[in-house]
Every structure is written in structure tokens, then in C-alpha cells.
Length: 289
Image 1: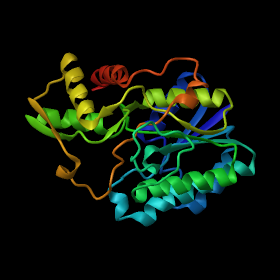
Image 2 (image 1 turned 120 degrees about the horizontal axis):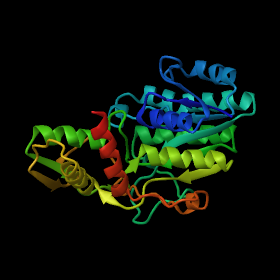
Image 3 (image 1 turned 180 degrees about the horizontal axis):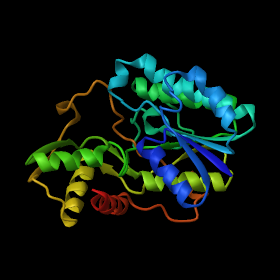
């Protein structure tokens, strides 16, 4: 079996490619150098020429705030290029797993979002990802769409690495405590994607790590775990702050918890709690830096 991973230079694509290769699977990763998703008209032909049994589309425009002023590019990458990838896979009857996001929801409910809950994006990023999902499903009804949230990993830029950097520079940080979700390690997301492919799954699935936290809770755990691993930190205080105290161009969902009820029927192992995975990730990060 041959698997093609797009967005292989991003944090999730990088992790997924490594996992596949470590399992002895013939996996090839491509980044912007090989295929520029801002030029989606090239994507269908390129993908079709690869003739991979599976394509895992991790490529995305993920700069949530910047997307508000750069909507044209966000839609080209997240909608038009996703559609082109699906068209390329369709040409040779391959299979596609497309990665999406909690940002398709508005975060106004107070119980975990299920796969069939209505999409109500709050901004350009969420809307572009939602329209990308629709484009993929229109062309490949049997595609897998995996939505995840609050992604972090050893590779690339993310909240965990930002908090660690700031914690070495400052004695106090204010962190929003009014937005809640489930921090999700790229290793665990990749493992779930491999399981979906092995089971020849179809349709929409949600995956995050177990447990719920606010950004403040998450930051507090990062500092605590980093201290236990003897990271050199300057930070003395974390202060919970309301959302309005840290205004951003794009609105964020206040509640980003995704239901894993459906995907638990596919996985033959328990989903790790986010704090357990955070600890493991930080150990790996410490060893590689």
C-alpha cells in the first residue's frame, strides 16, 4: 500500500509521515515545494499522477487571525485545493482522508459536538474549512473526514511551544480561561488516522485526546509538566483572563469539545488523556532540543 501525505512539513503531516514510515508503510510526503496549494489548479493532475492507494490531506491554511484579511488565499488552500485533491484521487479511484477542524462549529453549545451537528463557522478560517469538507464529500462520498482540535506536537509551531518560550522569558503570563477544548497531540491524531485507514472507514469522524481544559488549564499543565522535566523556566505566575482582555481579529469558539463516541467504535485502544500525552510530548521535546 502506498500513502501520500500532503502538508508533510506541517506539524500533523510531519508526524503522520514518520508514523507511517516507522510502520514500514510505503509513504511519501509532499510540501509546498512539491505542490503549492495556493495554486489549486495544479493539484488534481499532480495527485492523480502519484496514484497512491490513500492520500492523507494535512495541507491547510491555518493562520486563523491572518485569514480574516487574507480570505482569498484561505479559500484557495482550504476549499479549492481540497476539491482539487479529491478530483485527483477520483481520477484513479483512490481513497482520501481529509483533515478538518473544530472551527466549523460556533462553540455555543455546552455538550460535545457530534459529527452531524450543524456547522456554523465564526470566521474565514472555519468557513473555508467547512466549504472544503463539502467539496470533498461532493466528489468523494466515501472519503474520510477527520475533525480535530487544539493540535500540538514536537514539530512546528503550536501553543505548547509558545507557552514554553514565553515561560523562559517572562515571570507572569495572562491566559484566557473562557475557551475550552481538548488538547490533541499529533502522535495520537496520526495513530487514529492510521486506524481509520486500516479499517477502510468512510464518512466523518471526530478525534481529540480525552479530557477537557481551558487554555489557562492547558498552560498551567504545560508549565507544571515542564518543571517536573527540569526545563529552565522563568515564569512565576499564570493569570486567568477573560476573552475580551486578549482581542484577536478572528472570533474563537468558546466550546470546542468534540464527541469521540463514533471513532471509539473503530479504535481498538483507549484514547489517552490530554495530560498524559502532553507529558510524553514534552519528554520527547526535551530529548530533541
